[in-house]
Length: 137
Image 1 (tube, one colour):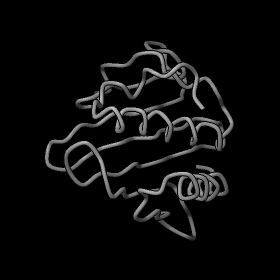
Image 2 (image 1 turned 180 degrees about the horizontal axis):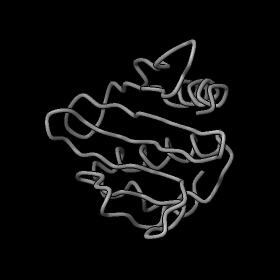
Image 3 (image 1 turned 60 degrees about the vertical axis):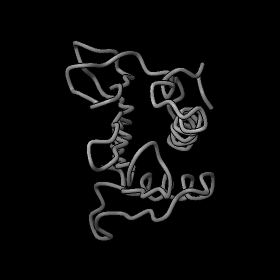
Image 4 (image 1 turned 90 degrees about the horizontal axis):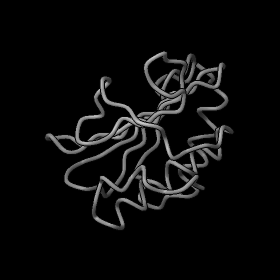
């Protein structure tokens, strides 16, 4: 994992999304993940779990508790799916992936794209809209 990038992603998320309740790095000494709790979502308490590696692989996994929707934006090599992939709601299944609407690769831009895609779906009250933007941000 890339600790410095996780801290920058946290700063970007907090700065650009007013619904962030908390943004916690799992371990100050050896960070591997960032968890972002949000005050609003589609159905229930919600959060993003974020990972970013030194090899530019990432995962932004959104989920809601109590059987709410989940989805995931990922970038990693995979022979069965595109390198930049989206695992759609309702479950973000590993077996279901489609090309991601996010083409950018820099951590801050990917973060802004994820926030914009989530906001687009939230404002439209339809989680299925989350991967429908054209190359955000």
